[in-house]
Amino acid sequence: MDRFQLCRALRAAGVPEAYYDIPGCTPGPRPPGDRYFLEERDGQWIVGVSERGTREVLERFPDEDGACRRLHARLTDEGPPPVEATPEEIDVLLHDVEGIQRRAREAFERALAEARRRDTGHPGDDDRADPPPVEATPEEIDVLLHDAEGIQRRAREDFERALAEARRRAAGRPGGDDGRTEPPKG
Image: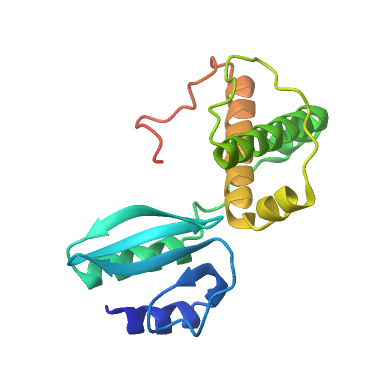
């Protein structure tokens, strides 16, 4: 697959052009924003991500085909299939609404604090058990809103962890034992 075939495949899959930057495929100057990129550099093909004006290399490939296939997989991966919950498991989860909201708020505050640390270059104080609540600026909220895929993925992972924990409790197994015989794939 070359970059032109990749562009056609991404368009056919319905991936918005705002999600990627591929030379010769994406039209004209690109407005600022977070997106994946593909480029050739020193005889290697690079798959990376551009976040807040900083370009980070994720993977290097010796050929265009490998890089294009990897970028296609990154942009079209829908994640793991949804986990079917039993009515009893749903009931357990529904009774933990406050805990779920608290954990979501804590995760948001951690993500916001990490984003601020990256912007300022300060490592931050990771020794605190509970970070103080923070007020997000409109710009920070905009950045977090543009990470909808990541937020959805993390929410799905949180739900699956909560569901696994509810199943462990219901089965009387100790925490951390989800009944699988092989390690989880990540």
